Image (tube, rainbow, N blue to C red):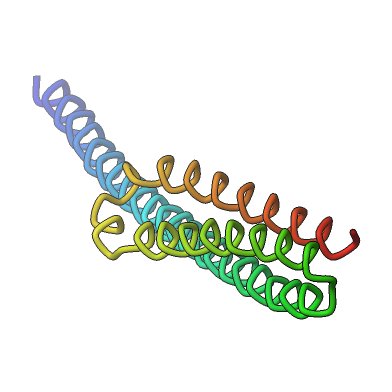
Length: 149
């Protein structure tokens, strides 16, 4: 009987050690996976922030380009005859008003309050940025058409 208890005790001890080692291994693996997940999230957030910063810089460059082209168009209009100059200045005023509206929407869109919404604000920002880019490119095309006419 002592022999059966000795084998049973040895088997129970091996099972207990196996459970402790297995539990420790699983906890270590879960800890490693959670750190890996945190690093992946941090990388995604930094990439998103960098992409957002690049979009802001691109829109600012497009706005500055449109303003410079408007000033060139004003110089071009000054060199034209009176009737054509009047039409050009009407177009310039329309384009200037539209550009001012885009600048105001761009500055309002990038308010710090949107960053508090986090991922909820991202789709709305993308749609607004795309719309502003399309409008800016349309203004650029109009200016180029007026300069070449």
